[in-house]
Length: 259
Image (cartoon, rainbow, N blue to C red):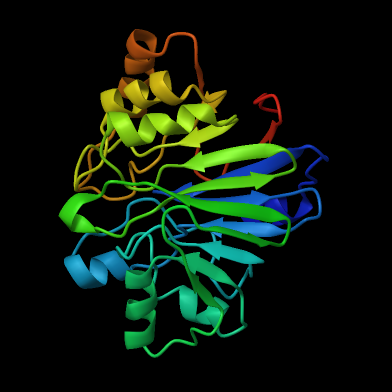
């Protein structure tokens, strides 16, 4: 069974969210109404075309084969803002939430941008049964306007850290929120957290379960899920983690239990 068939046929129970990993920092979320949120989805070979970095994990579908109901893009880097994938979706008027730098790049590419909504830290938008809050991310000079997202649906909160370094003071403020799933990068390059940093953030934020990302898409890339699990035993031994396979679909309920 191919990925899209499996994802379309999966039914999300009320009070849960379905989460599929597409590689790198790309995810699909589906709520019980069947609405789909595409998060930092990278489906093309744009990075290879721009920088020579070939993808070694295959794209699971093309933008012509599936259309989400809502798009989130944390920042303007090519493996997050996929300028070869987005035109097919934006031309249909699919709403997209992102930062101002991403909007500017889409405009420069001549895309249809009327459905793009710019967010800054603290902004909240609601669409298709998803409540999205833009939160702090420190991606340094690589992307000063980079965002993280708190995504709420079905009583489940997913904290997507975005590309960020470890920052104790501002990131630990998320500990005040009831977070079922946290998704951090672990590649330790380009201003991102490494495996130990991500585990230390888990110890601060205390999500119910953590799903690491941002590894294995490019040959020129760091990030070891095994090293992350080892770091979790040291820095957050009482917190759960789950390593997703490419194309795997899991369901997480409001208690942070994976089904």
